Image 1 (cartoon, rainbow, N blue to C red):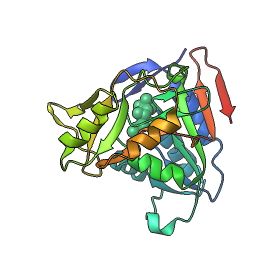
Image 2 (image 1 turned 180 degrees about the horizontal axis):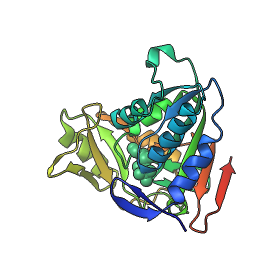
Image 3 (image 1 turned 135 degrees about the vertical axis):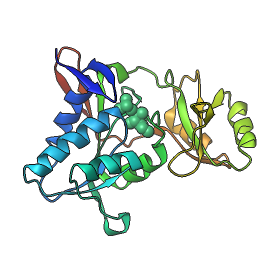
Image 4 (image 1 turned 90 degrees about the horizontal axis):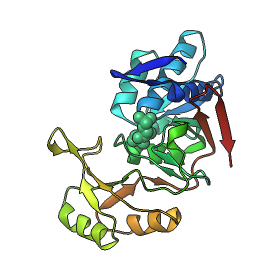
Amino acid sequence: MKIVEWNGVIGMNTKKLAAERAVESIEEGMTVGLGTGSTAYFAIEKLGQRVREGLTIRAVATSKRSEEQALGLGIPIVPFAEVGRIDITIDGADEVDGDLQLIKGGGGALLREKIVAARSDKMFVIVGEDKLVETLGAFPLPVEIVPFAHEWTLDNLKALHLNPKLRLDNGDLYVTDNGNYIADCHDVSITDPAALHASLNAIPGVVENGLFVDMAHTVIVGRENGSIDTITK
Ligand SMILES: O=C(CO)[C@H](O)[C@H](O)COP(=O)(O)O
């Protein structure tokens, strides 16, 4: 089994397998949404290779770091105002359940990821098999909240028994690309993702949450044995 390295982390290649398979679906002339995270990183690398080989596409990115990576590889990034629909967005996930509902936002980019996914004809989700779960929620659910009176927003999350903890970055509060905080909600068994999604976004101060309900078109799963599964709803 081939070992891969990403930002100094050594691991099996399940993420890379899924990412590279997803990039095979990108066709000439498409507008592509670029996700964020270690799996999306591999997709952007592969897309950069295809662009160097002559593929003509344009892209929008879901984070500053993905945009920088893409520009460094020669992938044209276009302003959002110039994009009508996105053909395909390729992005990772923290958990995927059997109905293809997702938890995203472990990398802190959930708001931009959701805006881009919602504008996409197809969202391709790329994961290693370890991300497949029966019930969402073992991974802490990220909720992006505005800094203003964030203590009150946390109170509202606590009232829903979501065990929110403000995300830290080297001891300081983590700040998203949008200038907001992330409350990670721990130990929640999410049996009704749509209902929780609605309850969360009804709280004043919540900007968006990491539940992606009915957004994934296709989930591509890289497996430890080297095989790749493609699951479409
Ligand atoms: O939602 C995300 C970033 O906000 C990522 O897609 C998610 O956290 C998965 O990350 P990785 O591919 O590094 O496992």
